[in-house]
Image 1 (cartoon, rainbow, N blue to C red):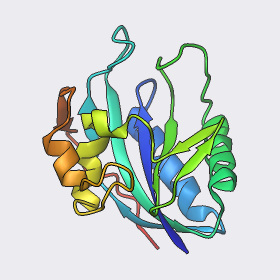
Image 2: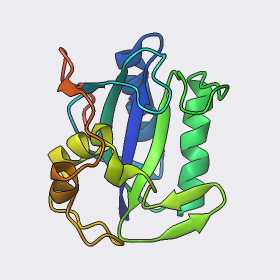
Image 3: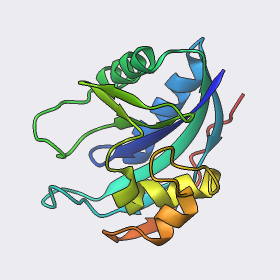
Image 4: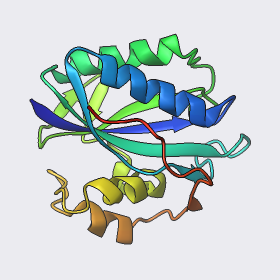
Length: 170
C-alpha cells in the first residue's frame, strides 16, 4: 500500500457535506483506506476571486491503485457529487486533487505529481502540514512545514467553525 495525500475543496452548496461525502466514498472504496484527515479550513479563492470562499482539507489514504487509476476513481467521485467543469478554478461542489503519491513523480497530460502548484498554495499547505509536517517534497527538497512557512502567496486560511470533518478512518 502506498501513502497518498489528497487535497479536498468545495465552495458551492453544502460545502461541508460535500467534503464529508467525498471522504466517505473514498473510505468505502475497496482499494483505498483513509488513514488521516486534517481539520477543515475556510479559504479565500485565488485564481478566480469572484466566487464564494472554499472549505479545504487534506486526507492521507493508503492504496494499491496506480496514480492514473486513483485519478479516475477521484474523478468518478467528483462526478457522483455533481462536479461541473465550466470555469477553470471556478466554483465547484467538490474538487479532489492528488498532491503527493509517496515520493513518486508522475508527468502525464492529465496528472502531475507532486501537484505542480501545491508549494504556492496556503490552502493546501496549512492542512497538509497538520497531518504530514515532515513529509519531504521529492523535487523541492523541503518539508511541508518549510513550504507552509515560506509560501509565496499567502491567502486567508482559517479553521472552519465546525473544524472536524467527523469521518472515522477505518
